[in-house]
Length: 458
Image 1 (spheres, rainbow, N blue to C red):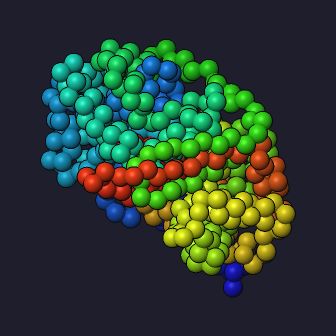
Image 2 (image 1 turned 90 degrees about the vertical axis):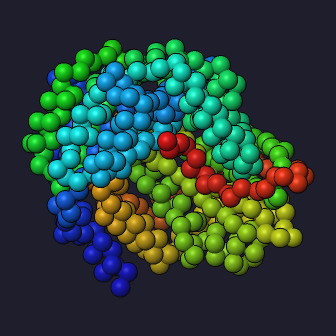
Image 3 (image 1 turned 135 degrees about the vertical axis):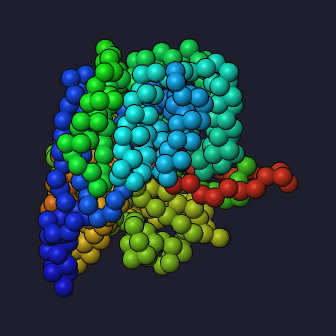
């Protein structure tokens, strides 16, 4: 039955309209890359513009500038008043938003398929003609500062994760938070944003992705009409800051008002873009799903429901990064248990995948679930466009989307054990602990945050 299900899932991309693999590509003379993914199931479309710039492009003193600029992209251009972009989209029955990550900043609209030109005209207008009014900037800066206070400074788990990254990474810009350090926000200026905008917001540093019930030739025609006249910029990607080899386990403690302790563990791990062996990131994806991803996976089954040493435990890994990252584990002790017991239980799980092959039955179940998740995600127009934009923007190329599921399916138990043996070692480990301090009467514990806190949504 497992093998029949796997065969069915792998055939879905060729059979289901939602999973069609046809992508049309064109690059304008000014360098803008345009990708179109037709999907005829409903008369709607998703339009996304991805810029190759995020917090990992920033340097000391201006951290958070990419996220600040994202906010200001809604505050007016040479011919649009503040808020008018959003008003026009809403009046045409659409929705729009944006997000900033470590490796990209993206803007998107969801509209009826006969409203494509509205989205492209508006995005082209703010690609090169942003107003960046000093008064509007001053107001929006306070909004971002409050966002930082609410989401990070007053959220003990989020604060611990931020400080954990700053310790785990020595040179990599992934050590900086997407929202920026508080001290850098205090000294941010509208001139910083103007320089950043001029440097990075250019057609030759962007990708336009359109998915939905659209004609590719019409998309290319409208892209040429609205984006074609824009002048390219001389773009110089920042020099990479290679992370030096870690030479031993690092430990850190964050003392902050909280109701319960929190454990973070991260092992330095490659991404697809820099892996020594092409299969390693796919093996990490499968390893992550062996440990986490549902009620039947090991962390939930053995640590939460079984030994009840943890009230929650998770694992995460991202293959689609511009720079090497980490394989992450986290946990919160159950009542009456300690951080030390949770760490010992997580390390025991790591030792198990390092020394034992994953049973073929478990491997098949995990592989089926992982592949099913990837296939069914394609039912979402937004996800279809997002995968293309993200792969293209981090330098992997959108074509990888065609082979991703097949490469996951090819992972073997031996490869899962091999990446665990190679990378999940004490020399690559950083351990972070949130040590809860007494809370004031007016303080309340906020909800736990996910490990993948690398994107800030407008």
